[in-house]
Amino acid sequence: MNKHIKAEFYRISRGTIFFRMFVFMALALAVLGYVAQEDFTSNTLDITLMGCSELFMYVPMVLVTLASVIISRNYFNRTYYYEIMDGANTHTIIMSKLAVYGSMSFIYIIPAVTIAVIIGARNGLGTFEKPLLHAAVFIVITLHLFLRATFISMLIRHIVGGAIVSYVLTFVESIFVMVNGIISGNDIEECFESTGSVLNNWLPTFQCSMVMMPKLDSDLVIGIFGSFAVMLAVFYTAVYFSHKNKKFA
Image (cartoon, rainbow, N blue to C red; front, top):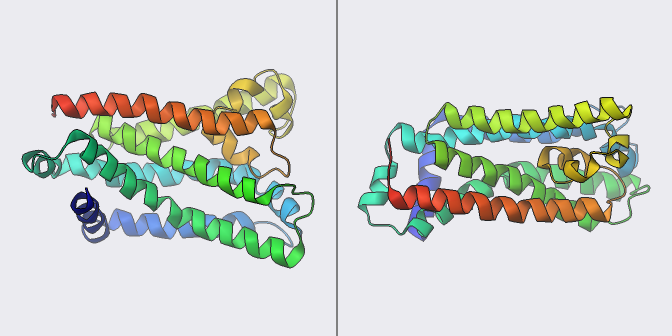
């Protein structure tokens, strides 16, 4: 599997401008979430993160869309044929893609978490109770979104279709959360306690926002890890049988 991972990294880093665009956007959005806040250099970490919680909710739309384009180029330029002709095991093909595009998420995760650590060390955590748990679930949520986009792109196998579906899915999730908040008469934070909160807790787009709040409800943590596990099981199975049959367009 190592040679497939190396080949994929080489392909995305050397063969397309989209990867450079992704790196730029990932770094820019990780920083923007903080610098967009007034007095972020002096506010405690809880105030800073709560202030940018809604922005972090929409960041995945941009990044997973770009990631989907990069992934789907395999099928646009037919490079996936080389993996098939090489006789690679279906699991090897899937796991190598997950390893590469899951790793890409850390281009966004590392600067976002690093800035949070610096702010917390300099200005204090405020009301944050479990910063390490916040960091852990933030990583899981981001991986969830990137791996889901990888699976979707491998299923649709179209450079535009994969990006559109990945974008629309995160967009629909955010619309659902906002509509649910409007119906209940609450804002996005209070929506957590509304009637639809059980489903909200299992939506990664919603989780992106709520992980920025000082307190993590146990139901939310269950939803974060549970939805990640369900997504992996369902999508992996679908992609496995799709690639095993090798019915490529």
